[in-house]
Image (cartoon, rainbow, N blue to C red; front, side, top):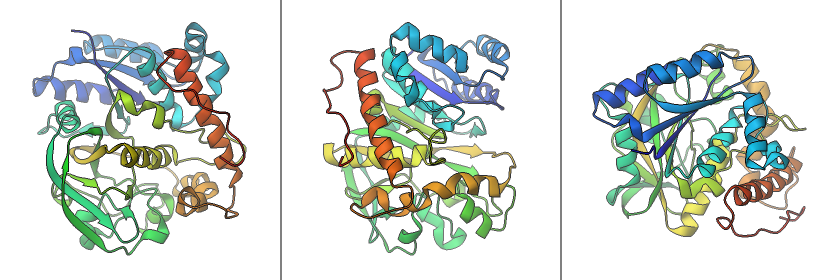
Length: 363
């Protein structure tokens, strides 16, 4: 069987998490021949050991450090677009999207290396079931047009995830039932360390970049979608998606930019993806499969330093216009890179992306 699912893991530390995901697949009867694992790493990392691990687990795949990525760009004839994948950034997951696109995989899965699957749930199988789902599911909205993906037990834990706008907190949540039949992304949520931003971690009283408040499976009560016209945070630590989303799912030029804007790669790409879904009548499915998030201790203030340049943009500018925001020029920079992203995809597979005009300051 030819692999149809490209599993992208950005890693510089705990790459052996892949062993747990492979074991989960075997335990639940999910054919690992369907998986092709791409480890996106750096030149200083243990690339030989990573490759050996894939062989030992019987997984097809490849390891790409910075040097190997540059070689791949040249092999594909896209070296002029190498800048769309930022250096030394979690947003290097965009490389995985390019690799998926060039190799005609039908599905992608993003996994962070500080996560583990829950033993009692078929991780890959559940994601594939979600992407194929047709039927009624809970549909969530709020008077702020934002959905807190942790809403189901928020009265108990009071948490809002990384990227949720501060101005949208205290929202009134409304739920109904929606029939969905075109799911393009499956966002699995997380237990143990919740995915919070640095400000919220500080408020929670943790100086080690984690959280004093932890989540468990009991905090989740069924799967859901965000209603049309509503936005939600999309976290790439546990995410499956169809190939068709790749043009709209660029992970942005984070960290490696003149404004030092970082930490919002998956959040902002998720905003763009949700808007595209609403226009096209498609859905992002949320809930299972849960993963265990074992975030390593690190300075909360270090994360805060990385997040500050983009905080105001995240809270208002993405959905507003004609306002002078701090570092607003970064959004023009993003627009230019998104045009280059589409041009790069078109070069990899001509005829798949419609011609796009050059970005201007007014776009």
